[in-house]
Length: 197
Length: 227
Image 1: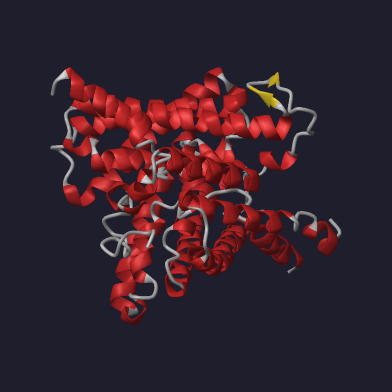
Image 2: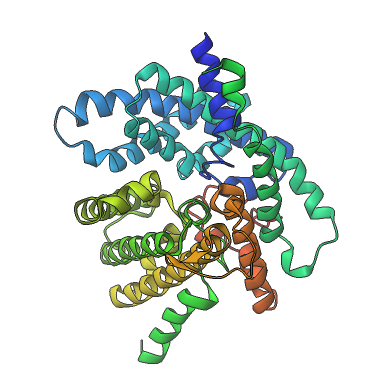
């Protein structure tokens, strides 16, 4: 249980996927047009991260490595993510039509999200076991969700403030994200303090 | 097409539609690996190689790939060239491979490259696609190297490893971390906006067609992501 919280808190607050490891930054400035979109996008990313980790881990360990073609992981992972996105979309359409507007329409966007592919690559590079990979996938997704939600509020304030013409849009978002990233960097020592490890 | 317009295609990619500074595509690698000017240059050159090879391949196969499954097909093509690039780098410059780390395979889903497939390579001749890929790749390389140089200058007081005087000021280590990258890129984009008299911000508004998710995105047709 202690390990579970160690991994989750580490992935959400200390090594945040968006602000500290800078992966999956595009949806931060894009899809979070309103609060519902931010939640829908984040839930879709969270879902696909856990599902694709569950699918990619056995494929890598039981197929690619024994065949000696571990270097093909990028192509295989991309196809796994693409297939899962398609499957999840069809499943939502047929079994939970009510979720379509809230979650379904954001699923295709996760196929081209580098945070998902980055997570799978990270799992392979660090040689994580299946349980560890799944928990860090959940933590990674929750970290993405937190930043999307926080930044959605910041973005709407930035849009309404009076800033120089050249800074409007992307430049102001990037600088606001830098300041948010600074506050996340302040949490670097959190794990040592909490768990004494 | 005559020579003049090929020159236009090339300059378009390097300056007028610079993927990073004008179109604001492919932001992630620009934030992470650009800790030094040489790392930015290396990442840019790998992107140039991958973009060139995959754009030529996709342009050659544009009549074979059905429109409905084009995105998975493109992902396999680009994934192959990314793997090639990674194996070459791992064989000859192993230090660079570990430096670029996970961001090298992440080129597969880089929207700066995908944008060229969607908006150019899939509808133009092979030679023109190659010129376009060279221009875009070079523009991306220049932008990454510049970002790397700025961060290296303020973060460690050197440029390309050569010490540069900061007029007595101590280097701010913060520039080497993610917030420094976000800040540097934000400032560079504001400068690009100023220099292009607002044209860059306008281009970012109608960039849906160059986004890999553009065709399926719920924001498409509603004024894009930047509403």
